[in-house]
Length: 406
Image 1 (cartoon, rainbow, N blue to C red):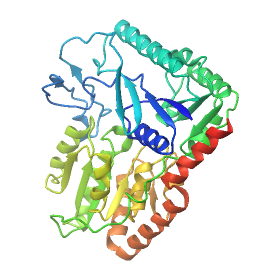
Image 2 (image 1 turned 180 degrees about the horizontal axis):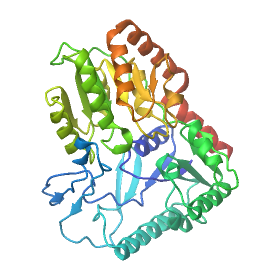
Image 3 (image 1 turned 60 degrees about the horizontal axis):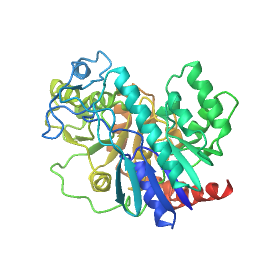
């Protein structure tokens, strides 16, 4: 089958779907209309290629617990032409058409012209490809939907933030019409399927999760660590809705009972400077490590060094990070939001706590630290749970079955 994936090429989820389908004999092309920011909004500092960036003071508000904690990078480099040629590369038997990085936060007119150029180019390339199926991952903005007209059969996969965030009536109507007209809608969780069903015209979505590579994410010997105390881990973007500041404050309470405890906060994002300041204010600068972004293939080795995995999200459509930890036989402490209760069985594979509640989060973490046998049992149950419901091979087969039904 010749498949055109209209999706963000830099996303690990896009790459996993594309390489898995290509590995099963499909002819796969990624067409990415997303022009990856010339400097990502969470980057702070300078780069020889990217030019200088400065951040505002919003990130620093994390340390005081005020403000949104969202930092918007200001691009100080040269102006980027809005009209750029598409790039074509090949990776693991997958063709990729995307655009070179562009200036973040350009003036409105230049942004609209650049977006129109990118989507019209992607539409032309897709029509030239003559695919058997067009699969759009993450719903585009409403003004981009006309570019999808005539691309059939069309499959839409909702990822979460594209449909969960507060929507105005025009967006809800546009998406409702889209969901009703396409051949298939998929969602990563039952929670997201219910969100889709709440749109106008009551569209239906088939659930196909982001599965877990249980060979890669499997128990392994613990790598050398520089502490004899318990190690708690967080692997997410350091953004407000993932609750990293809640974890830092909870960890401060954990340290009053377990002074040798350590926290690893892997990832990058706008809150990183503020989180470092918060850790220093709480006297935890030496107890919390910020290793920065971790390549996906290096995550299993990081998880192997942990005793407990924490996911204190304020919003979460699915929670693939929790499943990756469970596959490694780690107990998980997470918040009861969105699709998380589907992937963390409270009292079985981990513990669920209310969001934005550092005290309850600390209590749950301490419970698992002081009861290693409970933590071990939850870890074992977690891997069994992942093997029974979220194996990557099974999820790819599920998608292929849906493709064949169109």
